[in-house]
Length: 209
Image (cartoon, rainbow, N blue to C red):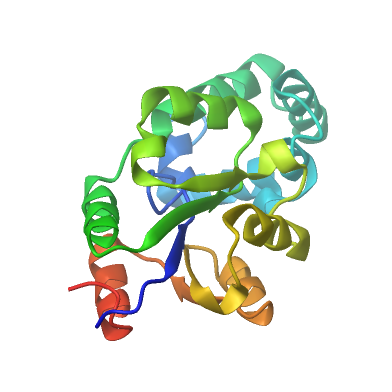
């Protein structure tokens, strides 16, 4: 008999496309020649999701403020920074293979949730554009709770919202720091690379066929 678990999905890079180097190469072709250059510019722009962008992720500042701060910090024109901020929703394309995995996990009887570092404007966009309520019982967006991964508080808030114990949660995320944080708090956690590899890991746990 398959044991039912609480399976918690990250969004960017897991359910939705998120690859900043290629994203910036598409949005800023005059500034970013390829993915290699894109990785360097992404490090400056997103600061590994700390700094200005981290504050935006946590809902501590709004979109106009993050644009202003990034422009002041980097010297890039504010209108160019605005172009990137405006293009993010279009970058967050659904990964259909992850949707198939979600649907299979639901059919197996597991409870499904999400835990995503996501600024409020993008969270609103995803809710408008996709049937999140069909796929997930509930979820947490960082921008709405004013905390973000890998901080312990957002994991605590998630457990409270999900009504779940840490050991009953299997967390899928593409950032090693978030995986380590979850494990340190007693969660089961799997580093996500793609849906096929995640399916193999979940199958090894006896959670999906």
